[in-house]
Length: 157
Image (cartoon, rainbow, N blue to C red; front, side, top):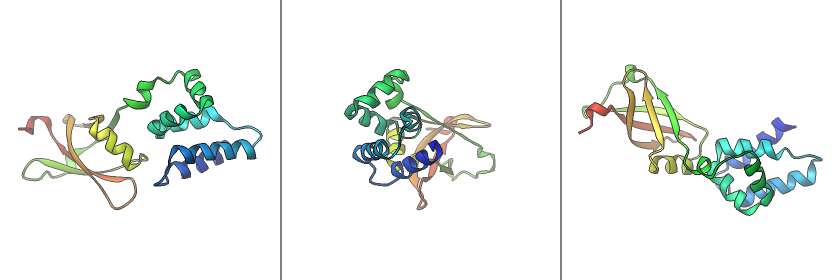
């Protein structure tokens, strides 16, 4: 049952117009349909995939707020997380300006990627050069695919 429930939750969370209302409706429907609802599993899944939405939901739902407290999930974990992306630039040819473009696939939605980028919370690490600078990104037509534009730190002017 848990796997099916997570698949249904994932469907809701990946919908472009997903909101706290949708998550709350999903939860209330589960309470009506199932004898038991594994809220710990739902909260843990959302903590990993949609921390911002989980924070908003916990502000409205006291049961979720209590679960977060029991799981000892700090507010900073729901707001100040960092994404680490490992890349290998050895096979990528840079532009004349020294900018590398790579494709990155993620489960995060565009709103979350934008928040991480604006908060400078995306860390890109190359096998040879170590940490490189993410100077920009663009969304590819396919869902959850992005072009990352990187520059090696020594090359920054």
